[in-house]
Image 1: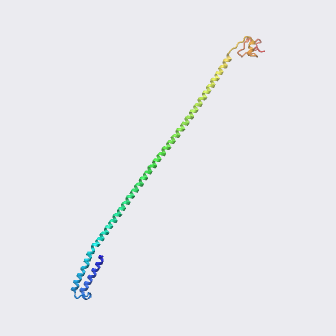
Image 2: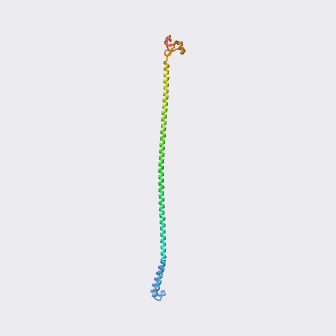
Image 3: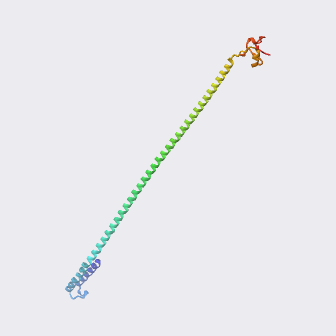
Length: 207
């Protein structure tokens, strides 16, 4: 609007100049009339410009206010977006840290489980070895006891045999001897006695 009034004033000035040079061009009688009317007409655009200026100022102010409001909204939106991005980043970092801690805890628990399993296997193997050693020891002791029993039995049998062999049975005559030894006895037999060996052939009471 201000540009329009400026253009209008420029045209009025040109008309006044032409009227001063040649009043007949603007249908005026003299240059004085041109100046008086030109000044009057020249003042009108200023008045109109002054009346419209507040409106333009208000429009500019409104535009500036709107621009400021828009800038504030954009700034608020930018800050909100930055805040949201920061919160999301912090949340993602916290989740990543938590996941890392859980993974490390899981690894520690798995390591402990493996160690416990290995310890359990070692204990079971040691128990098996101890059981096998005890079984071998028991078998050895049982074998030794059996051998000792057999040796004792053998010794007892030997002792009995020796006792039987060393027992001297004396018979009054060959009739009694033959009741026990029907075919007689050689000189190596405990029941042999020279009195029963009449023919001195080292065999007593033979038939």
